[in-house]
Length: 331
Image (cartoon, rainbow, N blue to C red; front, side, top):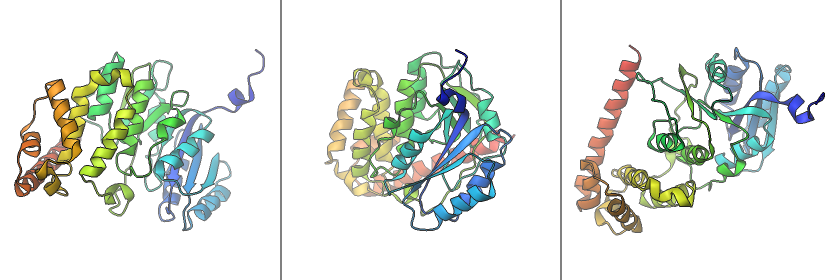
């Protein structure tokens, strides 16, 4: 055809989607880091999730000050972060999509690094906040990249990645707003089952994450009830006919959820009466899952004090392991 469709003519390489709620303190810094990218074929969509501060005003001013940028502001009623992302995705025109939270920033070469591997051989490009010392092995079949997404080999966060828009269905963001911690991992799992081509990895820092103690993800109370409800939704992200194939990984997920509550909800764990424990026991039995020492304590010990202290020790091990990985990655 001599003339492409209007959609093809207007198509761009990357859509950058930013959910924003009461982000007046951070949003300009976030947008400035994107405006400073060495890669230029992108659009920015800020999905304002019913902010009650000057977030929308600050974005509008940025638009006026940077007329060369393709920057769209969507003003929506408050619906939660997943809904804000979904609304932005529905307006996206890019061949690829990436997400940036309003309080985070991008290194100036982030998009260039990510897009350098954007070709017809992949559906998913994965970058890092801190590149690992050892490279991730090849993933030649769907089961490999699905398990890698579930077990964290592919980082669970939604940033530092490019998703092919043709595959990233907005329904993957139909996540209850009550899920405010780990919602991005749910979208990634659903996406991994829609992919048909293996992911590619970019071993470079392509995202600057800012931790805020008062953010929803860090202020959410993680207890057994939360983990039980989270698990019920996580199961739905896996096609029903494939769930038996992933029972071992699902069981590990569930146990990690319980271990994550060892300090905050030790009494409930000690009682072993919550229906979540029956679900986990059945999974252990059916998948012949072998418990680690921390998992065994959580599933068998009825002393809340022991459970709490085992949770503290586990958290120390995880923290030390993370710090060591950062140390060696810089060498």
